[in-house]
Amino acid sequence: MAKAKYRYNPHTLSYDKIELTLRNKILKSFTFLGAGLVIGVMIYGLAYTFIDSPKEKQLKRDNAHMQSQFNILNKKLDQLATVLEDVQHRDDNIYRVVFEAEPIDNEIRTAGFGGINRYKKLEGYNDSELIIKTASKLDQLSKQLYIQSKSFDEVFEMAKKKEEMLAAIPSIQPVSNKDLTRMASGYGHRIDPHYKVRKMHHGMDFTAPRGTPIYATGDGKVIRADRKSRGFGNHVRIDHGYGYVTLYAHMNKMNVREGENVKRGDVIGYVGNTGKSKGPHCHYEVRKNGNPINPVNFYFNDLTPEQYAKMVDLSNSPTQSMD
Image (tube, rainbow, N blue to C red; front, side, top):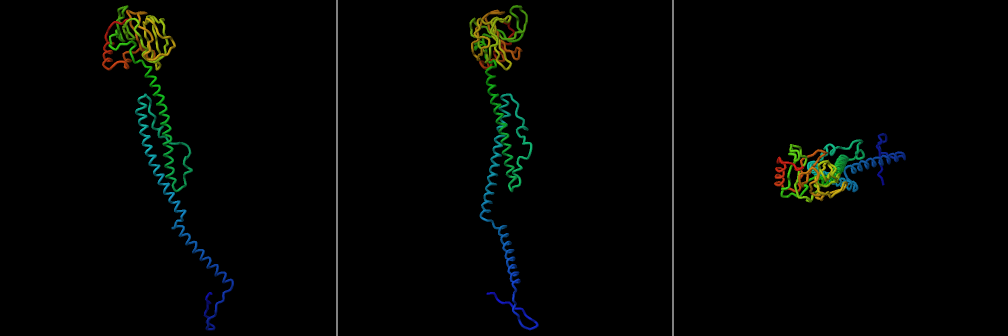
C-alpha cells in the first residue's frame, strides 16, 4: 500500500493530506512509464553497442575466417603468378627461339580489361577492397593463362611443322659415300670436261659404278622424272617444300614417277652415264627458291664433324667436273 503524502498549510498551521486527482494519477503514471522507456532504450542501446549477441559473435567469427581465407587465396594467386611468369619467360626465350618465332609482346600478356567497371557490384561492402583485389588478380591470371594456352597451341603446331621441315630439308648424300672417295667435283667454277673452259658448276658430282642406288636426300614429292632437260639425261627432281628442290641427273634408270611422294633414304634411281656426262656418276643439285646453292651444306645427317670438314676440303678442290 502506497504511503500517504501531506503538504504543510501555513494558514491553518497544520498538514493537509494530498489527494491526487484522476488526471494527476494518469499523468504521473505516464511520466513513470516514459522515464522507464527512456532508461530501457538507453540500456538496450548501450548493450547493443558494446555487447555482441550470439548471432553477431558468429557473424564476426565468420567474417574473420573469410578475411583469413581471402588473404591465403591472395598468397596462392601470387605464387601462381610467379610460376606463370617463369613459364612465360621460357616460352618467349626458349620455345619460340627454338622454332624461330617472335616472342609474345609483354603488353599483350599484361593488358587489363577495358570497358565498364567489372567490379562495381562488389563495391559498398566492408571488405570490398579485399574482394575486388582478389577478383582482379584472378581475372588477370585467367587472361594470362588463356594467352599462354594459345601460345603453346602455336608452339605445338610449330613443333609439328619443324619436325616436317627437318624431315624435308636435304641432309644426306645422294649416294653411299661413307669413305668420301666418290666425290669427284664440287660446287663452283670448274673446268668443263667437254669445252675445257671454266664454267659455273651448280652441283656436286659423285662417281660410282653404273647401277649404284641414288637416294632421296629428304622427304618430298617428285615433280619431274624424265630425260627432257638438256644435258641431264635421265633425271629426277624432288620438291621438298619450304623452297627446297633437289635434282639428281645422269641416271641409268629412274625408280620413281612424277607425282610420287618419297621419304629420305628412298631409292629414286640408279647411277648411270646418260645425258652430257663423261662417265658414270650422279650430278646432284640443291636449289632454294629457284636459286642453286652449295649442296655441301646439306650433309649434316650422315657425316661426322671430321668427315664433313674433309668433304668441304674435297668440294673446294679446283677439279674438272663430270658434266
